[in-house]
Structure formats: structure tokens, C-alpha cells
Image 1 (tube, rainbow, N blue to C red):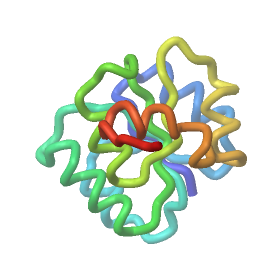
Image 2 (cartoon, rainbow, N blue to C red):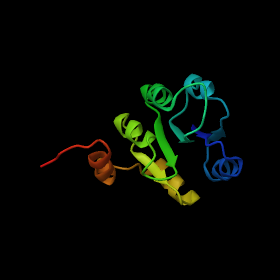
Image 3 (cartoon, rainbow, N blue to C red):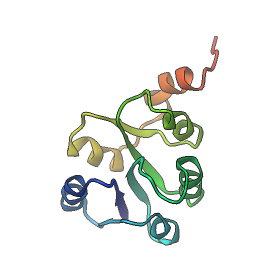
Image 4 (cartoon, rainbow, N blue to C red):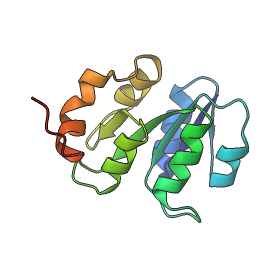
Amino acid sequence: MVLIFTDNEQLDRDLNKKIENSRIVYYPDYILEEQQATTLIATIQPNKYNFKDFMFKVREKNIQVILILENDKVKELKDALTLGIYDIIFDPFDLEDVYKKITVPNSFSNISKYIKDILELEII
């Protein structure tokens, strides 16, 4: 089950049409209670949880997160990488980019430059 939680009605509908076995979600509690979810497609959005706490709870359930971000400068990128969220898509993107992440998730090497820069790691 793929849960769609983007707070963008048109994007939600388009993704829901394209992705088999998907459901649009409007409340974060539903995501945390859902037992069949394997993937969450999400954007940063206001809810009763702060981003880091919410994503920690989602990752604790071993749900793959595909995170759609405005750019690689948002402060939540550091939290996402720390929590092992590697499937990150930056604007601009198309539906095919999101769809591909479901079946072919990013490897560590795909996002290593962000990990190194954002987490300020000194690698020799």
C-alpha cells in the first residue's frame, strides 16, 4: 500500500491515478495507524507532529519514505538524511520521477553527496 500525503490536491489525484494500490491520506495519525503501508509519498506540511518526530515514527514502522522537497536547502533535509530517508525528489519533478522511486529506491551512492555536505562529514 502506497500512502500519498502531499497536501497538494492535484498532485495527490495524479499520483493516485498512476500508482496502483495507493491511497490519499489527509491525517498523519492515519499513516501511523496503517498496518499495510509500505511506502509514503510526502511533502513537508504542518501537522500536530514536528517533521523529525513524525518521520521518525514513520521510519520506525519500516515504511519507505519518498520525500518531495522544494530544494536541497530546506532545513528538514538534514533530519531526513539522518533518519535514513534517501528517496528525495526536488522540485521541479514529474510523476514518473516519483513512480520510479517506488520500484527503484535511491542507493546510498545516489545521495552520498548530500549526506557528506548536509551532515558535514569529513571523509578522506
